[in-house]
Image 1: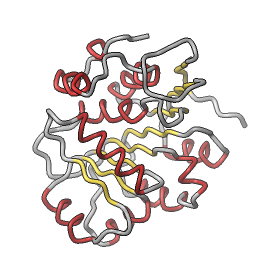
Image 2: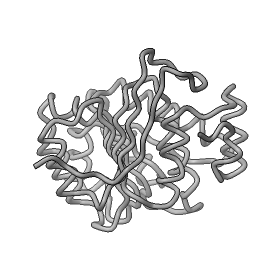
Image 3: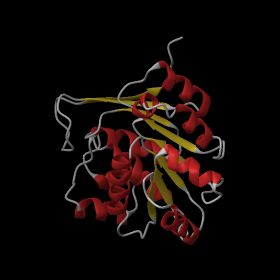
Image 4: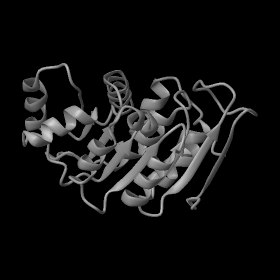
Length: 231
């Protein structure tokens, strides 16, 4: 298990940002998932909120961003406005020394400011399915050059009836994209989604008795392996 962020081959500015936020040791999901995502593989992370999963996918995405691009390079789908705001703020903090441009989009807010930001150029969009589809339909959001898509709390999006919206959004992204799916549980509908839209995903499962971001302890186990779905 990696015990130092310096050992994860992340850009020094990302390691600097993590240290500035007070984190010195990666959590199990970060140690397991960051190298997989840096290598470009698809991944399914079975973990609850509080395990450090946001940093686990945000840091590799930030590491792989190309500077001075006007197109969206990464997309994160979240079930709720609150989670979208939380993820976007976390990504902003992790990318504070990289000048990463992150935009949260969600319903209940005027379209104008969000569209204006997109027109000026954004590296990463974090949003709820409904607003993302609205922006796509308005020709304000182009996902044709996205390199990485993250489905955060996929089981929650499923329970909220977003599965068709997710499929429509994924259909707007390149087939060769990298996809990361995070879900506390893996019901049949999530497995079917993974089978359809992911390429040989690696499985990372984190089990812990207490859910808070802190250094690894004996209550935590993790594993990384190819997916073999039950038939």
